[in-house]
Length: 392
Length: 213
Image (tube, rainbow over the protein chains, first blue to last red):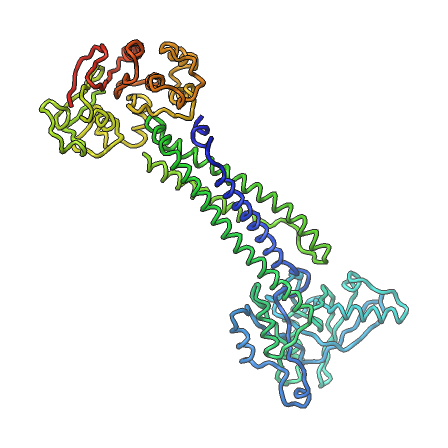
């Protein structure tokens, strides 16, 4: 009966408009948060370096060839790049300062031997956590991450010699060894094993400890030059990192830049939608609260009379509070349904476009929905309380 | 529960000259269970008395006590308790919910204490000859019919005091008599007292005390 007295026969036009606004805001809020997270996660785990990380070197020009300019990075150059506000971190890529050759040592595969170039990257830059990615003297083998191009080359060799080609798992099970040496004819054999593959780095990656071991025992004594550095851009700032690369004449593998650029563009667009959604939720929440105040003003006589005939203000506050909780609950449910429908079609569109974005639900979308609901609930409660006690 | 008016002077009535036996500015005690007539002409403050004593307005000097409690100390919880179980009121402007039916108006009040069943409420309407109006919206009733609904609504709770502000102003003699009988019966049954404000006519009511404004 109280509901009939307070809420029936009211002009619902303003309520419906506010609900539509809140519905759109909530739907866009959940969708944009979901895709902002998914876009940022895009590419993670697929490669060994984080999606915002590139390995760069200076472009080689004729002046480098003639020895008029340098291709290595000085400490101050690295520091200048590190100081940029859109750069999260910069670390040098350490290369071998000794001779290394790689060869198979498995009776099941023919002997294959080649001189190689090895590198190591700071573990903080590794996106995937490779088990046993460490080495110390006396260990059974050195774990290595192999460039995928090297596997292709290996298989080409196998094919040319009439031997069956080998899969990734097969490569990982082959026993191999490094021969590390120097010009003084000192040499050492160290067993190694492939534990992962990469498209991002052109050299074999080894743990830092192994590189330090080789450089300390077999270095030719010359100072090590830093010809490659890793730059980790801040989330959504990859465009600025790319501008920096162009401005400083740096280059990286194109695939690294493309993903970062794509993420940066899409992330910025989704972020704009997110900002608009937050504003829409806020404005529609305000309209709903305003509608509540209007409803209380229209019902001022009824509210006053109810309290005069013995109704506790808390009962009336509860009525208004729960009424608007229900209203926002309906908005939240409709917004969630809209999210699921939109997600279904967007995921389909991404997949058909060749973008394999993670389709799992993002918990943060629903945390945002819950937060919006809680904020609205609190605002409703305090508005109802203030409005009712004004009539007391 | 005695109601004490200790030198009460509502702000709007300060500028008016009051008689020496007026309740305004004097010490007056409304004793528990007494039947009191408040007789005064228009503009003397009958409604002001009701709204002040019932805690609806606070623009006065002096002190009003329910028993030993000063009403300015009452919390919303205490006022709710009083308005539900101790003091009932028939307002001069009736304050019925015009959009609700007669039955809904009565049930809304009765649901606070469930003192009557729906059929008993209908029977009370029957005593005042408006039982057939149960489903009709209050806004469509005549003033006399609304006045009878307001009286039944005031009776639909336990009380120790019933304060009525010109409750028969739109009733003919026969209907006023029926209302008086109903109020009398219900008030006696609860050992309660009442305050009846009127423009001069006591409507044949027997009273224990007459107050002047």
